[in-house]
Every structure is written in structure tokens, then in C-alpha cells.
Image 1 (tube, rainbow, N blue to C red):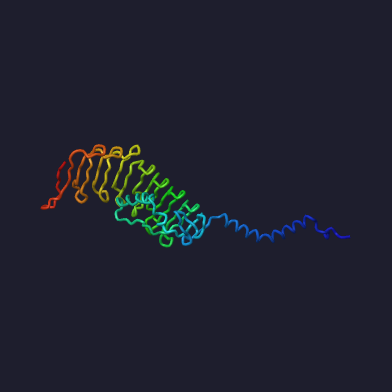
Image 2 (cartoon, rainbow, N blue to C red):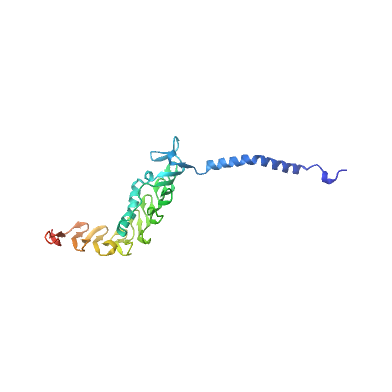
Length: 293
């Protein structure tokens, strides 16, 4: 009689063996199928040279349906030549013209990595220079409109220039601008739907002194606007405003000398009374004042 060790394999053993062989045979096929499935479901990437823009939407060249996915090396002018970008980029430019005169700003000419949904900009966008070495802008689109944080960088440095918050194409929320030399905040303001919501102040990058203040109360410019010359050395302008309208004395001073250039009075946005203006005496080359109504 045969020993128990030489019995015929049981049905369960055969089933396990067959399953192992079948799995081994199917493994390559399953791997290929999984890869194809992931490729079909995952995000697609397209080079801009293989894309085209039709009626404001991105397409793969020759495709009938708008493209969805990531597009690399998109020239910045194709996405930043728009009204809302001009409005938003004006903020750090104007601030630094007061806080750090002569500073360079990023101009158009970068390449961007964008994300689109059915041909429309949607999601995070990064624009760079120097073959991707330096950041120029970082922004977010919501169905073609700038929304969320917009970050600016000083040219060729990767140093942040400004962080501006937007809501569907307009300034909304806290905006900060940094000095190119000190790296500290030279501007910190809050907007609501494109309008100042709190008092705005600009400080000189080198000295830290105030160079401009625009007072805001209840969402409207109210109080005395003041401006100072470079580095906050001396007063160059002041005007009283009530609910966005000039109301009271407005004065402008000659930057080189500090002598009054003109003085005029306003009543709720309308000139009232005589105006004092300065003129230069041709004989002495000195600035004198002249009054007229």
C-alpha cells in the first residue's frame, strides 16, 4: 500500500496551483492595462508648440475639442495681456516707484506652465525666466479669471516683490509689497472688491520712513493724504479728503527746495476761492509766490 505521503494531490491544491500560474501569465497584461488606464485618467501634458489658441481657448493642434491638462512653455504675453493683469500689476509698480525709485520690474517675456480645463485657464500658473531658473510670477486662475494669490518676484533673484490677493480679477484682501534692498514690507494694505478697505501706507525701503499715507474710513478715503520726498526727507504734498472728494486745503511743494508750489481750497470736490501758485523770477532764479483767482 502507498504511504500517505504519495497520495494524489487534492483538488484544493490543484486549484491553488492553477490560480498561481494564471496570475503569473496575466500579470504582464494587467500591468499594461493598468498603465493604459492611468494614462487615460491622469492629467495630460502638452508643449505650447503643439498647441493652438482658438477664440481664447487652448487646443491640441488639429483637435476638435478644447484641451484639458498642463501646458508647458506658454509665452507669458498670451495669458497676461488682459485688463485685470494691468490693474493688479500696477499696484507693486506704483508702490516701489515711491518706496524704491529706479527699481526694475519684470516685463513680459517669460514662459509659463499653465493648467487648463476644457481650453480655459484653470488652476496654478507659474512663469519663469532664465530657462526656468528664476520665478517671475505665480498666480491662480478660476475658469479664466485671476483669483487668489498673485506673487511677483524681482527679476533674476527669486526674491518676492509682492503678494497680492485677488478675487475674480480685482484686488481683494491683504496685499504686501517688499523692498528690493531691505526685504521688509514697504507696503501693507487691504482691499475689498478693488477699493481700499483700510488706511494705505508706503515706507521708504532704505530709511523706513513714511513716504505716502492715504487714510480710509468706512471704505472711503477720508482725512489728510500726505506724501514725502525720496527717503521721507520732507513733505511734498498734502490734501484733505472727505468720502473720496477733496474737501479743504490742498498743497504741493517743490521737491528740491520745499517751497510752496501751489495752494488751493476745495469744497466737496469743487475748487473754492483763490489759488496760490509759485513762479520763478527770471532775474534772481528764485521761486516766488503769485496769487490769482
